[in-house]
Length: 217
Image 1 (cartoon, rainbow, N blue to C red):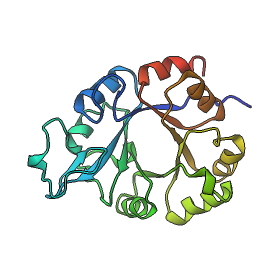
Image 2 (cartoon, helix red, strand yellow):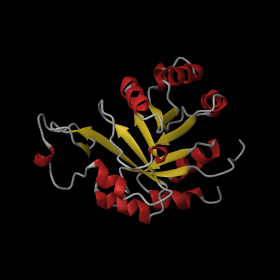
Image 3 (tube, rainbow, N blue to C red):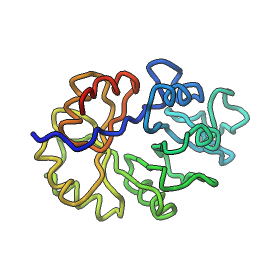
């Protein structure tokens, strides 16, 4: 297996979530301190149309004002991002993020739901959009995954990192010029295997440790 020319980007899963409460401004700030290349967060829509960072479904009918103060709004999250760093935004439901003045080329959209992802990509064509994928047991072939991504008009995949992620799975994706990320890698062996496979980025709860684990890559 040939080593990649450059290490994968380190994406902090809901911020530096091993060391701070996930999806909080504190976790995002710590991720930058720990050397992350990007932060990942989950986006949901309140009943009054405000986009917030929250993994689980919000209480039915909950407005922004009714949510705990530690749940950040998207503009506050984007404001933490230093020059040259990026955001990975998981769309937990059908919504199109309002990026304001934040450059779309520094945003990657991800979602499990194909319709949600394709809708957001059409609305924000300057953003990279990647299909989250984990159901390898039902994957007919790696070529099927390529066709799915191309038919959706998106830019690649964000794969659940299991032993199913092999050179044979990745080869058609690479041949098609697609971006390939993987989630959620929290051990030395997994991070190094992902780097050896040549993935473009890895999502981890431990950005500082992942940087160390990459070693000479």
